[in-house]
Image (cartoon, rainbow, N blue to C red):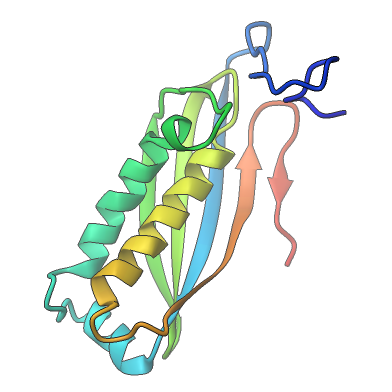
Amino acid sequence: MLTHINEHGEAVMVDVGQKPVTKRTACACARVRMQPQTLRALLDANLKKGDGLAAARIAGIQGAKQTCSLIPLCHNIPLDAVTVDFEQESDCALAVVVRAASTGKTGVEMEALTGASVAALTIYDMCKAIDRAMTIEEIRLVEKTGGKSDYHYEG
């Protein structure tokens, strides 16, 4: 059953009015693959544009907060917290990890995914002068809690 389509096949926003208020969390990640020297410059805050990780952290938080403006039919939800962290996976790959939390009637998966996407795009923007061959890969939900069910990525 498609929740965003009515009986006439028209797009609708899901009515969450009767859902219970619960604590909801989500974690999403994205991987940015780049040349080793690009990653070193990013980690050392040695980019011509400035501190790329600081810019990406702020962009990820802003992206999560603006999700309802970017994704059609998403609810505008109050976020309790959004964190953006970075984990070096290899000499040429950086993971962007975004955690979002809300106390409300609908989940924060899209906020976490949007935050991870925007943070990864910001890393690309900050580093593109030295490495236009960067790729953004595997944007995915890692975990969500609250609501009807929990989810944990098993990959």
